Length: 267
Image 1 (cartoon, rainbow, N blue to C red):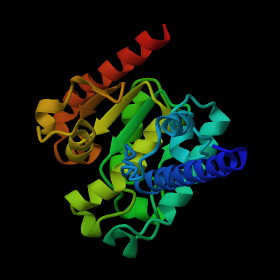
Image 2: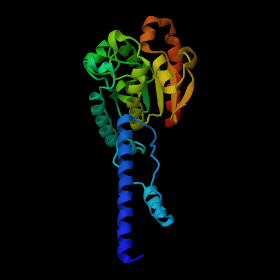
Image 3: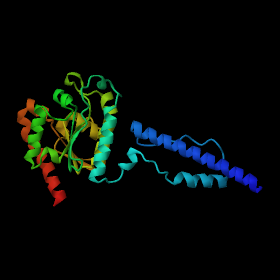
Image 4: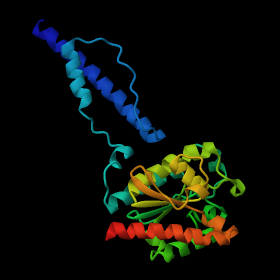
């Protein structure tokens, strides 16, 4: 093959490689926007010679620099980086219109607390007062949660609090399966950014969603589970305790396990 033909062929190969990398970049962008956990590339239809396949294989196995949100949160972040990533995610969530709840919300209830939290509480969904203030757990159930946190020697400012849903369901009804499926990716990203030592799932929906189970909260509470490499313990939701105060002793037993786990991790 003449040098001019080789040069032409090399240019064609480079163009093919660039096209493939652009496809990969587009798919990563879709992953960032829609919360997919994997990339599925379509088969390459063109048949190449063995030498051309080697060149393309080397290029595709060399990871391109893709400045995506998902890529950055796979590594441990310092506090300033966590704050930056959480603000970026909060901006995305505030623009979310994926389900009907966006039409009736007063505020998106993203989450609150320190991004360096060792302990993260995950509840169900915002209520009336949370929707008005844009902060989680600020009503009567929130006041009880504050007392629960303080009972193990912590302040609200030292933990992180979020919900499965970021918008209030009408009349405080239970979240439906579609809302949970569409909103949970936001929570997953919060957890990935914060990387707490332990998650305390409050109530049925938080526990069942994070543990991917249909077991009742009565059977799940008080036990340690693993969520993406992080310890998780479920207990009753504070709103449930307002209706069933006799079960406060069970939550106290559960939260002491969280306290002891945190102490062991820092000793």
